[in-house]
Length: 158
Image 1 (cartoon, rainbow, N blue to C red):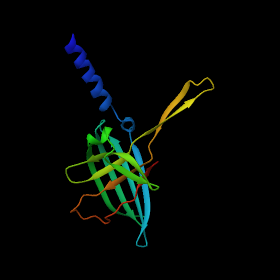
Image 2 (image 1 turned 180 degrees about the vertical axis):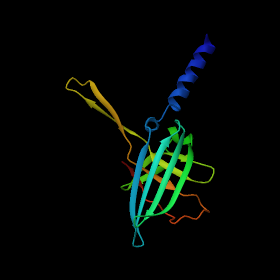
Image 3 (image 1 turned 45 degrees about the vertical axis):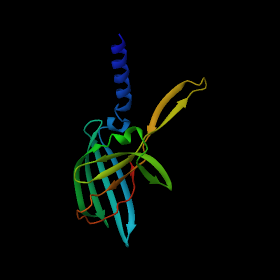
Image 4 (image 1 turned 135 degrees about the horizontal axis):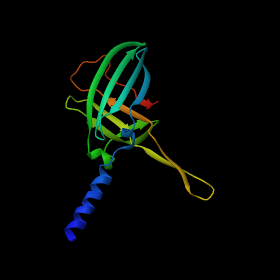
């Protein structure tokens, strides 16, 4: 009986720690960012298609003065240490926000800000709606590979 309780407790702990991330329940996400660098307008668009809770397919387009300069297609996997810890962050309006880290063997890293949950209540203090909000992400390009740009702006979910 003691073994069953221990196994059940381990299952619940694992399910809680590695349950599906809220944003991976969506079919497709779009993030965009823009920044002026050396007199040129850099625009970045990223489509994220979750494969499962731990793997994402990325389609990244980098435009300079509205002309396509680079495209990156990649699959990244979550760094499981980033799920429950605040090891990684994205700076958003001078605030460090905890983030999930996804990466691949080629050195591509993306940091997606962890979800913030909001609850709406009625006059009787019953929860009427629960929602979450995800604001931004950042991409770090692989070192040693040549891209048109070295620095990418923070991107916002659309």
